Length: 284
Ligand SMILES: [Zn+2]
Image (cartoon, rainbow, N blue to C red):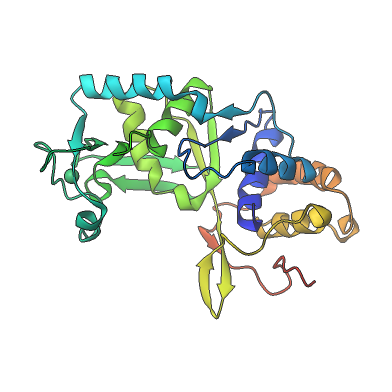
């Protein structure tokens, strides 16, 4: 985890707890080949070090594949899927989305991905609680992969199934997933599932060699400095913790923030760049 993922964790935690809700943790580990052994346990330990304590059992997507298979079959039976033989290289030539190459059938024999057939005339509109009214033109997004060529269920299908079956009322996450929301709502409609409320938190950008990069590698979290890093995260989210809270443990900071969360100035920005001094550099 890094400061950017801490923002999403803290923002969703505070949003749930300030409204009397439960905060759920789900491990998205469908791509077994890419899952680093022990990483889920490490993430859970980090959450605990920041006093971000979840409600109920942790769900693991790798244990839920029959549910995704059932949803996929329901889409197929409704004529909403097609097989796609396009290679990554063929698709990288397209400007945006999927050009619809295999809508009438795959172009060559061999293993295929399965795509969700979107309605290209549809514009999905939703009122994002943090970003305001948002529209997604499905024709521009294109047909999305719901099962990969290697047989692994894709993120977009899995989260839609999980959100519905876990009874999720509010999805609070980083704005890097704002665009995916159009697909997810279209999938919910095709599967006759309820659409939760969405709220997208600002995406943290970092300064790397003078240019801005999405925060992924740097600004690593350090359990030994959890209080200071949590204070940074609260400020980056737009809260103004009083100076007396400097040096306070994470649980105390979260208790204060839970009360302050409802006063969060909206709409939130889609992206933020930390000012000098707010960056969680290891040297400070
Ligand atoms: Zn194709």
